[in-house]
Image 1 (cartoon, rainbow, N blue to C red):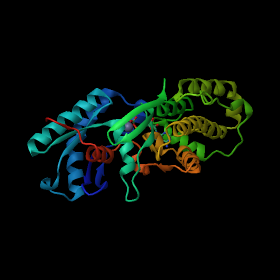
Image 2: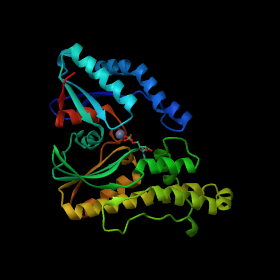
Image 3: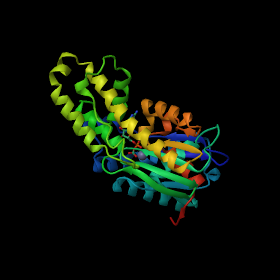
Image 4: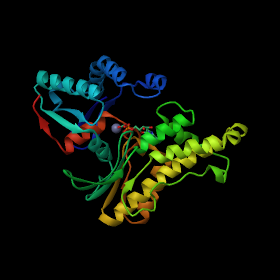
Length: 314
Ligand code: KG4
Ligand code: ZN
């Protein structure tokens, strides 16, 4: 993924992605070795396309930005070494970007009002579920999050249990939207830690509960296959309700001006809509990234590099 943004605001000039969706579906997830091999093959063509699409010449590009982590080490190394080589060859400064911070800065990719600080950010991705207090662009404090599985990981594991391919989040979301049948009481799922006075969360038990519910209701699911959509909705609501309740607790404690949703799970419609309405009720501004900037993308890396540049030697 490679992105180019305009210096005057976070306007995206190009945002190109090399997709390995077929491979991910085939292996049921990311195989680090396979991902790294794919990336070696696609990184230069993607950069070339990004520059061409932006309509800029090399002279008009001010810097090269690259994700330093967190992530899969093989993929990170390929990105960092490529960026270093380009920065050296093009004589441009090199900026390192934290992947999770970049997810949050996707909220600055807008031609509308940008978030006012202090803000509480809820970062929900495949590997992370964190609540962050952002007092200024570079003063960030971790205030809560999951003690085990990330929200996206919970979606992916639940999807696998329900027979959906990887990545499962979008498919659970789609199935939930298609739910028609009422959920039998025996198929209700828990909302882990929702009533605990803490910003900690836990999602690993939810997947276990789902597997048990499927086992107990095996015959019902065979007789009424559409019940799987209702179960997907129940799972989606269980995760969302916990995330929303903990974010509301953080709002109560820290009194921010804005709440920022970020990460791949921010693409989830139930979470987006319900969080928006709950936060608005409390008179706080709520920001959710444009759908295309929720899951991993290069535009958010460039946005982070502009708003909070950390220069490194190539
Ligand atoms: O941020 P991201 O693209 O990659 C990481 O940094 O991890 O997040 C990917 C995660 C996956 O777990 C995927 O299932 C989840 O985001 N995801 C969703 C949706 N779209 C992506 N989860 C729920 N609903 C969605 N619509
Ligand atoms: Zn991500």
